[in-house]
Length: 378
Image 1 (cartoon, rainbow, N blue to C red):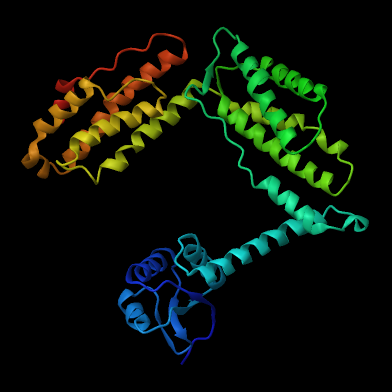
Image 2 (cartoon, rainbow, N blue to C red):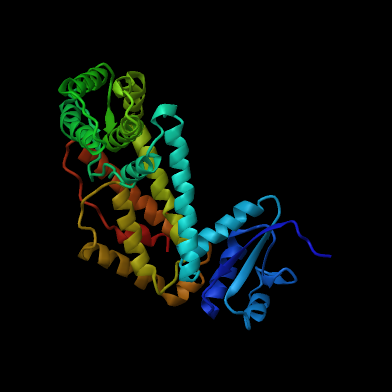
C-alpha cells in the first residue's frame, strides 16, 4: 500500500557517484524522519541507503523527486533543498529556479513589512521601495574587535572608556546615520555621549568590555535607523523615531561592565574545553604538534601577544614526545588524557597570571616550560 502523506519536489541533479553519495550522506545525518528518492510515485527507495539510491538512479536522466514524510515533512524538504542549492549539487536551471524563489520570498517579506507602516495613499511604486530597502540591508556592518578588548579601571579613572565613547562610538553612529541617509543634528550625538558618560561615572566599574558595548549599541542603532529608513522611503515623518531609548542604552552599559571573577571564569572554561579537541586524537604522530597547538590556543584565549612558537616551546614539546615514545603512548590509555589535562592546567595558570598582570598594567611574567614538572604525568 502506497503512503501518499508526503511533501515532494523534483530536482535536476548533477549525476555522478560522489554527488549522489553527498546527498545520501546529508539526508542520513540531518533528517530523522523518513525520506525517499525516486523518479516516479512507484519508483522510489530509502534516501538513506546509498546502494539502493545508486541502483535506482543508475539509468535515470538526472531528474529525481525527493519525498519527505512525517510531521516535519515541509521543513525537511526545505532543508534538503537548501543543501542542494548551497552546495551546487543541482544543475544550473534548478539552482536558478531556487534562487528566484528565494528572491521572490524575500521581496514578499519586505513588501509586507513596508506596507504594514504605509498609508493607503502612499502605496505607489512599492517595487522601487523594496529595492531600496533590500540594498540597505545587504551590507554587513563590521563588529568591534581588538586584541586588548577589556578596559581595566584603576583608581576609578575612566578616561580610557570616555575616549572610547568619544572616538569609536561617535564614529560608529555617524557612519550609520550617513549610510541610512538619516540626518541627525550635532546635539543628538553630543547629548547621547553625555548620557553615556554620566551613566558610566555613576557606577563602580572594574572591567569594561568594549566589544559588548560597541556591538550591542551598533545593533540597536542599525535596527533604529532601518525602521527610520522605511519611514523615509515612504515619505512619512520620522522625527519622533530618531529619539533613542535611554533605559535600553543603560541596560547595554550594565551588560558591558564585568568583574574580574566573571572574566577569569569565562577564560578558564574556554581553556578547559580545549582538552575535548585533543582527547580522542592524541597519538605519537601528532603529539608534538598537538602540544604546541594546545599552548597556542590557551594564549589566544588570554589575549597574550607572546611569540609562542619559539625554541623553548619546540624543545618542550619535543622532550615530551621523545619521553613518551611510540610504544609507551600506544599503551597509555587514560593516562594520555591525564597528561593532556595537566599540560592545559599548567599553562592555563601561567597565562592567567600573565593576563591579570597585563590588564592591571604590570609587566607580564615569562612563560616557563618546566619539562620536569610535566614528566611526572607521563
